[in-house]
Length: 240
Image (cartoon, rainbow, N blue to C red; front, side):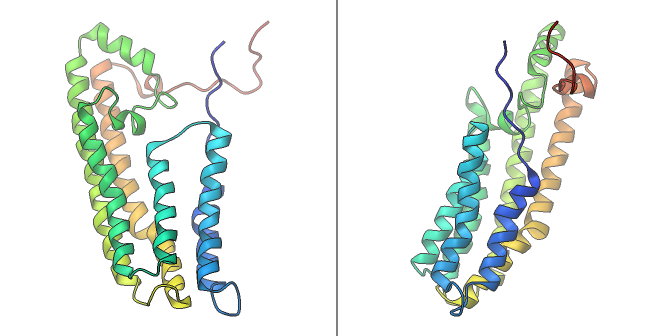
């Protein structure tokens, strides 16, 4: 009997815990008449941290990018509590996607490149069927070239994200750290992160995925439906 696949992440809960609640607390409840700047920052960061821990316990799966994001939240809290200048927040915001981009490039020589975690994930792709078809058609070299070009495109998306992260942080974070005004600016940065950074980065990743799938179709001769992992129909019994 095969092991059950990890539960899918709930996007709505993700957005509430990682964006909506931290932004609300940082912008509305970090004043001296509420939680205060330091406690407000701590409470705001508790939501994404708690979500990350709970999601790992529920799905029993560590994702490299999720782990980097988790570390980013902890670093943000540390920088805020140490009252470091907003410049260092901008450096951190640029460093995280840069590290991921470099990791994607360096992993190209590894046995399991990171592009496999992001694009060629067995939870999404029917890997055994694809591998068998590549061997059958003798297109392993084409597949290797596709993985390399996809890795470079993915890395580029993270480097673009790094530049946008740095620019947004430098534009918004003007007040001294440890103040209500700084927390409000940090909340705005979390909110604007989605339309300014996440959406363009996701668009580049979707293009990388589309190009990857097209390349796989060419190398394997499989249709899109055949490439993707088929989900069992609900309500069907597993045995007689």
